[in-house]
Amino acid sequence: MSTDAARITDTLVLALDRARELASGLLLVGYGVITVHDQFGRLKDAQPFTNLITDAGDLYYAGKAIAAIAPANPAAPTAATGMKLGTGTTAAAKAGAGGALVTYLTASNIAFDATYPQTANLGAGLGVNAVYKTTWAAGVATNAAITEAVIDNDSATNATSTAANTYSRVVFTAVNKGASDTLAITWNHKMLGA
Image (cartoon, rainbow, N blue to C red; front, side, top):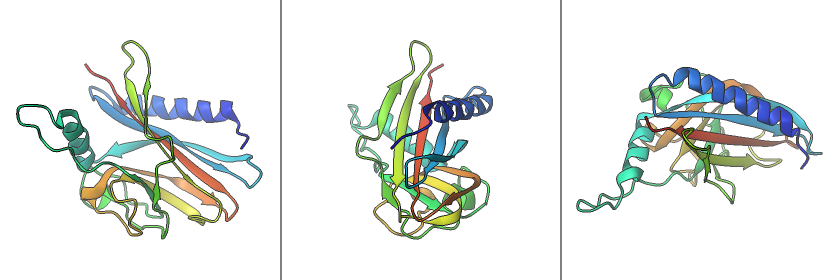
């Protein structure tokens, strides 16, 4: 699939800049890019976003950081498995109604792409990204007004996720995914120690 790599890169840099504005003293920020390609692989839309890592997401990352460390050997939290889409417009929130999908888009529950998640070391003193990517192929999740997405731990379930299952949520300007289009979300959670 051909892509306009420069446009996607510029869009991703814009999303990171927006996330940095929110980061004032934070150690974990989320940002990414949504892309839509037509049936010929031409880029139709590239939209940057910053997201909110939910209370469940905070617990997830903290739990992963200490999983199986002696002497307490705490259990690892349920792993993130994929993403889901929706058409709700309620603002993202740490918990409650904005901490999960508001209006689930049926059959949009898709696991991460085969080579994801990944880590991307940004270099000395710049932090490390946890990179998640999910692609909705032609014929999947067709809708003219997709406005929300989540990273969750129950992508095998064709239903909305609860706030307890939702690690990250974003609300964005409506994306139109036609029946022959492919939509992809590349989602970064940047970790930077202080």
